[in-house]
Image (spheres, rainbow, N blue to C red):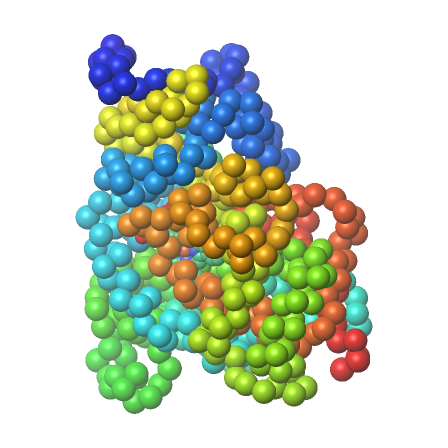
Length: 493
Ligand code: HEM
């Protein structure tokens, strides 16, 4: 402690505000736990920042941490002092499902994984609108045709597991399909059918979220149910890995004009079956719920902002026509030509970032540039092993960056000022910036465009339409009570 004190003094660091938490930190730990149980965690973080400032420190019996919503500090953690911070015990927490992949590795392992995957994400085929079209069409077919309300969030989670598995393995789990006649192991009864894979994957992910909350005590959660779910998920992915490894020795599918399959392309780079399995699962976890979250929140806001729905629909119909009279194919480049679509998605990602809070652990003694002292202007000393948490959800709502109306959904703010730096971070920043950003934005834009082209009426069908959203924060953000809407054509077609 004395060494740290001297180091901090020499570096002109000062302590940030410390959360007053009686009983050795038990009181605040209990408060956070309760807030999480009651789906108020993000609100609780906001209240603590309101009381203690943009950077504060808190002791707890599990882990002491410093929380910040200062862009300068987030930039230091993710970019300028990248090598001073790591993922802590994330690898061990997630290992049973994800193994060693880009999402769970630090250091040389991460560098290798990122170098392996990055070229695949740079290819045009990654955001394949023809592939998306099949799934969005199934999605539209499944919507109620009698103008009744339904939970569109639940549907988006089915859509994104279908499109993600199709893109990764070359075959979809068919979660949206009413019957699964297409065959394939993902649909076969030996592994529990289409729902089998999705259910086991969801179940395992829930356990990962609970293990992550416990940080270093993650090993307390390892029941049979979790192990069995992981085994079943691995069995399915291994089947595809074997197929890809066999296909590798055959004629090139891409050259013979067949569709691009992510796993097959990766199998040309590495033949290590475990690395292939881990890579697939890491991408599935990183990409599926996040995109579903963005789509769900988009419809949450559109259903509450009819003027935005109308304006956006006009732009889409002007560009592509409506579904009775299409005038142009919906392509990635044409979608980019609709600035208002991008502004709407930007605004949704600001207010409801799918990864609302995150953390890093110092792997050496280091500092944060600001947040110390009574006015928060001094550097903060961060000893090795200390956790730094950052909530982009709360950073994105700071009035000093976003104006007095920071809490309001107003896509037009992006027309007035599109220039934001580290105060806007839905996809993370620095060397670990999201690899799937383009894929996600294309999938979300394409799905929104198709739905707006097809339906001209969207209504909020929440049983309690004026209440604030109840947000569930596991690894990603979702709406605890679903997103209930009515979606139909006024001409009844
Ligand atoms: C709206 C959708 C998405 C959002 C908001 C999002 C956000 C993020 C964030 C915040 C991270 C950093 C996590 C961390 O380092 O702790 C991340 C990492 C990552 N994302 Fe995304 N993501 C989205 C969609 C996708 C999709 C669709 C894919 C793949 C198809 C993907 C692939 C990845 C990968 C591979 C990483 C790990 C990068 C690394 O550690 O080097 N993401 N994403």
